Length: 380
Image (tube, rainbow, N blue to C red; front, side, top):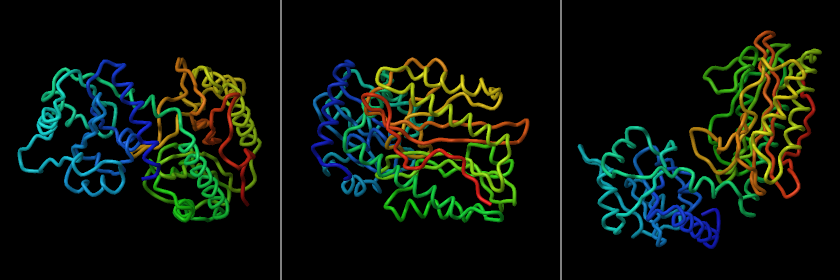
């Protein structure tokens, strides 16, 4: 386990109070982030049908497959009597096995469940709702508790940020005209692993040439041209906690257009940082970003979000909602960690420019978690 049992107990008590406040008798946790946060259970077994049950009396029970019995015992606070295995036999409905377990635990009142998760596919969700009717969608219950990080969680984010910085150093040191993209990725990912880190919640994003205008991973590699552009988006991950970063590296001498786009990104990220403080609205952060880009005449090149929460998350993405988008009324709290990304993808000129790092919200503003400055990076 990555935290002491006292911290998990504190989290469980907060969750129990939230369950009671919501008028629920129990919560069915399908999100791996919830399961990890509340007891340390760490697995990719969420790709199959599994559920962690927390009832209003404090009982915590896991229904999973046999390969995850030892996984739960090794990584979590759960004891063997709290781990229940459903047998994979042709024709079995795991949702019915869950209902049997709920009956055995004498849970029959108002029950919440997490439907907004990769841990509950639509197929399994239909099995669940058809078997246990009148469930209450409660995906935000644990998610809202996870947003504000404990002191120990902040330490994990700081370590993740160190690994992100190390990965950037590795990328810059390995990038030159003619470099193979695969070698850059190998150096970045190697820096994270050598630092004791984990796989990130999604693939490291790399694209050069026209591919630099993409902000998603895609299969295929190329060698860098003597004059090129390289967009990277990555995150160090430590104990599943993330601190994402983003940069566009210029190969060759930067053009005036690239310098101007970088200036816009720098002004935008600083404007966003000025808008992040306790009780500020997330939508106002997005507005600060868009106002700068629009002032530079780059409204056509910006995206519809400029960042999102960071946390301990699992595949398929490292996004830990909420996001900075237009009109988001959610208030920011001290102790949250956010990834700010200023992204310009100009199809008119086939030019990309990005700038991003993670920040910690404190009482009077933000703390940048990265040690790197925000200068334009170019190699020759």
